[in-house]
Image 1 (cartoon, rainbow, N blue to C red):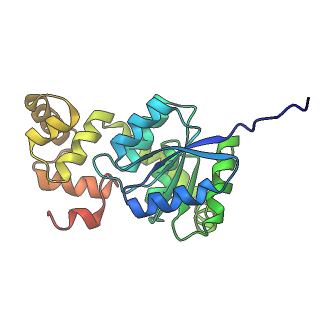
Image 2 (cartoon, helix red, strand yellow):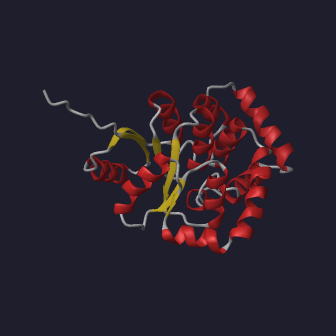
Length: 231
């Protein structure tokens, strides 16, 4: 009797807030025999929770995610499930974003303008332990190698100033959420949120919510486009 060999597929979680993009990615990857989409997340917090639950081999992560941005979600995923590889798929190609996600442990970075055929290749590459970049990102990293090395060091130092919870609270504050709303989202008391807000101002030497908002934009914690309507 002939023995049937079952191929072990690469499990993938999609973290993308636009439903039409998520569905398109799912259809694209469904055609790949060695890749299986096991879940999809519409927010950064969902991405972290589902990664902890499903332990996918690869998370395809957008940076501009609501509730918890892709940068912080990547950091939390790498801390909680280090075996899972994070592949960034974003419209952002700014050097600052690239440096931050690489410093946080992302294994690859694709821009959404890249041909779709590269997505499956990138998933296979990061799953094997390699890195994978869109050509423009790879060129950018190569051209600015020494400069990037110095700046990544600064990003790490800057990032170390905030705990994961402080960064999470900061995003909600910068997005215009009241203390009561933040407390409900994060699962802490209003008093604890107030303490976090005060601690953030002390750590960053800022004196009001507008200052925290500007810092969040500069640090890539929220998008400029989102915050422009609130400042």
